[in-house]
Amino acid sequence: MKEKFMIEDTCYIDSKSEYAVSLTADCLGSLIRQFRGRFEELVILCIGSDRVTGDSLGPLVGSMLKKERLQGVTVYGTLEAPVHALNLTETLVRIQNYHPGSLCIAIDASLGTKKHQGYITISQGSLCPGAGVSKNLDTAGDICITGIVGPAGRFSQLTLQTARLSAVFGIAERIAQGITMTCQGDSYKAPVEESAWLPACSWCRSPKSDEIFWA
Image 1 (cartoon, rainbow, N blue to C red):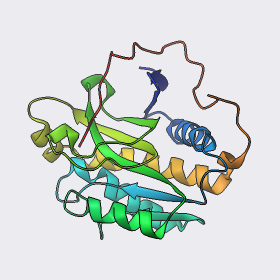
Image 2 (cartoon, one colour; image 1 turned 180 degrees about the vertical axis):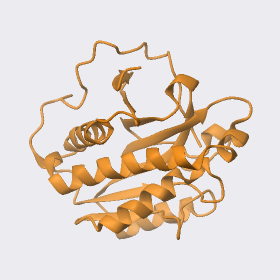
Image 3 (cartoon, rainbow, N blue to C red; image 1 turned 60 degrees about the vertical axis):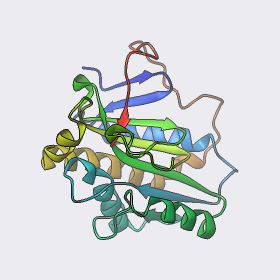
């Protein structure tokens, strides 16, 4: 299995790879640079609930990032104060009111194909929280990062409930470390060429060969 590849405009990174952290930082930093000069601060919105193991990926990432105290970065969604279906709209309004002109990175658990379980995905655009379990929630983020915690299917809710905590924690840890590396290095502030964030990749798949469903 490849450590990193592209499907459409989404970067897939194997969280078990020894290069997962640096690959995550590179992809994220390059994508943030596409917004260079158009934002004043970073807001990281970590979506999910600690009541469901698979859905706890977002709050885990949020709690890890809070401990880093990253300069110029505001984190919403932790194990202590999760952002979930019941308070997502309220949180988005708060971000709009208190952080105008910010770039929002939304993070959530997702379900995908079995062969991509354990992968991190990074892409430009909003994510749709709850889509994987048939919930119609507000879209969130200018950039989205997900961790694929299980296969999509008829039993998506059960998949989230029975996901192994050690696996979810491992993905969350790689995401948090990648974000920390990006923000501490300030590499995303450097000039960037158009579409430079899309890595040259000989193993890209067909745009329709895979689907992600947000938890």
